[in-house]
Length: 488
Image (tube, rainbow, N blue to C red):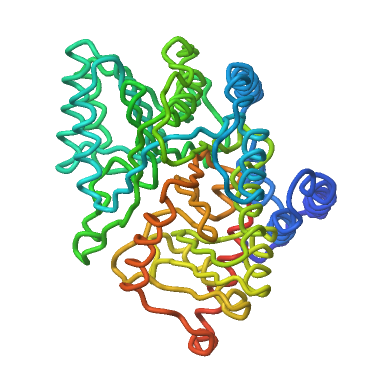
């Protein structure tokens, strides 16, 4: 029969040469400037499926933004350092351990932004109230409103917020808005959002747009994952929450009662300017417009006894994985207690060693995760790490399903709290543009501890013996998912 006829010998020879050629070339190309685990995962994919594997590698193997954006980020970093030299010379009044100041110096060198005293920080756990707080801040704006979120949606929960933005723009307030193109495009009602924006005087742009016909092309999963808002340079918001109703406009989520649990921070004080710098950087990257004249350059009076803060931007625009270096540095410095909340905990080797080593040297380490995550592969990849974590003495608490614990923060001893958009996974370290806020002093750790206590009271602790006895098919899926997580 025709389907049993072998191809001519010369075709088979050519295909064999191509097959081996791809594998040999991959051995010398794939490992370049990649973690060994990541390189090995790519090589396995290419060796099993050479032609599809090399095509996927060509699309997703490069985690760098274009050179012009990297150069622009470097230029902004130099300008920020130059404009804040006097502030750096004054130093911080924080009188805590040296390792905290060392972490702050690390952040300064990598992300360019200094530590700033005298900030007021209010944590907000209530999802809907957080949107209301941002709406009220917009209604009081008289100069500018800068909004930047990974996901946006015009829905029943956010309608008043977008109405407030449109009204502010109509009365002469400069309203600038950024959203991630692909993340927001995937949300039901995207066209409705665009209609609302186009009908207003809001200045808006997509972040990292994928528009090949307009020359906008890059690795599709390089995304801007930041969440922040600045009003008049006076009030700032940042954290884990997107601008969308808590069920993410999915019928399946509403049918089973799944909604996202978040943590946001409302900020007042000089650190608001640092958030504004991050926004201005992203706005400049998408529009070429320079907003330097709108930055107040830290002309604030510090609040006595306030929180010392430092904004830490990270992502492909930097070459140093700022968030990963900060996280591992703080974890290695801990001497008493570490509490971590991460919806997607898929660490690289350096972070895994830092956390397990901390537990093995007697530090009390706890990890809060969702009982059931919202992303199949990531959830199973995360589960593949539970056994080694439990063996090291780390206590794992599972936030009850169908809720999704999407908050992203951690505390170290009684000294430091970190909150932001960054997960503890390889995507947040290498592929996503993120923003984190390091905070110390002023009672901020006590505020965060109350949030962590709430999680613990609601969660179920996972025990090693129970986890080891889970079904073998689950173990298999976990391990396969773990392999896919390193394909970056």
